[in-house]
Length: 173
Image (cartoon, rainbow, N blue to C red; front, side, top):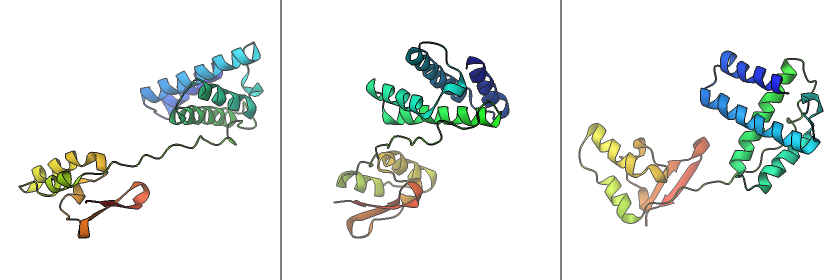
């Protein structure tokens, strides 16, 4: 399996032109999975021996060690991409990671601005770039963008678009 991992990392680097950080992260994820397989099976595993139950066991092992869901999801994505590469290269017939669902990730709700922060945000003096930079820097944690800076909220509410252009309503009062 080490040769397959090395070929995959070369593929990421040379053919997909992945960032060195991405190649390193995938390599670390796959090495961690290889070590898990050796401990579980008691010997070096071949890629053809890996099934969805071993991958689920790996994810359960990560969960038991207290790894956050977002990190476990990234490791599963690394495994999916690796096994998809092996299928494309003809090493495997099926991707054992394909059917597994990623862990549900927690949704982060942006914190709201208090009334004083909103007033300071909307009353920045000046024109041009300086007037847009100050509010966007101050409002970064609320999800506002610089295009929202010049608009006054109607009836004490601020509307902005969230991820996927979903409207999000925030109270100013």
